[in-house]
Image (cartoon, rainbow, N blue to C red):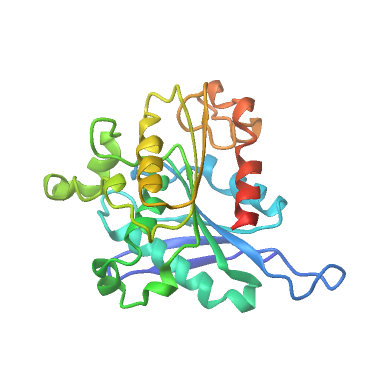
Amino acid sequence: MLCEKLDIRTKNSEAKLYTYILDNSPEIDRQRKRPMVIICPGGGYAFTSDREAEPVAIKMNAMGFHACVLRYSVRPAVFPTALAELALAVALIRKNADQWHVDRNKIIVAGFSAGGHLVASLGVFWNKPFLQERLDISMEEIKPNGILLSYPVITSGSYAHKGSFVALLGENYDELIQEVSLEKHVSADTPPTFLWHTYSDQSVPVENSLLFANSLLENKVSLELHIYPNGIHGLSLGTEETQSANNERTFQPEVANWIEMAGRWIKGL
């Protein structure tokens, strides 16, 4: 396995990309190309959670996928700093696809909570001029082939997780708050999407996923959506491996099959 810590730099920021790249074996297929899943942990744009980082990458490896974790810039960095970092991470993976045995047509961005807002932002903004101009890079290089959203922050409207938007926008809150309500920016160019949420999530209401899913339907974008009846926000894998030291309710085995369903979805892209 290739485990590296790579720098992702923009003009005014630096993020870290941690790779979990599987080796090829001549006993199986030395030319094998695997999907790559770029994981963006949550944390309200104030930090990036360990619980939604390496444990998820290891589960992706176990299903036969390459994985990496992007520790993107958070407060006081403001929009679109983290978005630019994620775009550059996708471009880096695509540039090294042959060397790392990555299927360049199966680069998936996966986000949890505010990390879900980040990856969904790339999904709706990847072909917008403001991002291309900031990075001086082609649309084709930064386009994800799929979006995997776990209890994502999406809307800045009635069901918003306001703290995430305050951290994301800083002094630009009043000016940009409507621009980062992502259900308003879905188009036919948004990549296929897998979403899951819990009905009882009181921090980021399930309506966030429903609003995004409805916009995908309106634009005829392929999607898979799962709503579990029980579970608090921030469940990650829902297993003992990712149980929070401060909250035993983050052990919710009823939701633990989401990653297996997501794996089948990735293979079917």
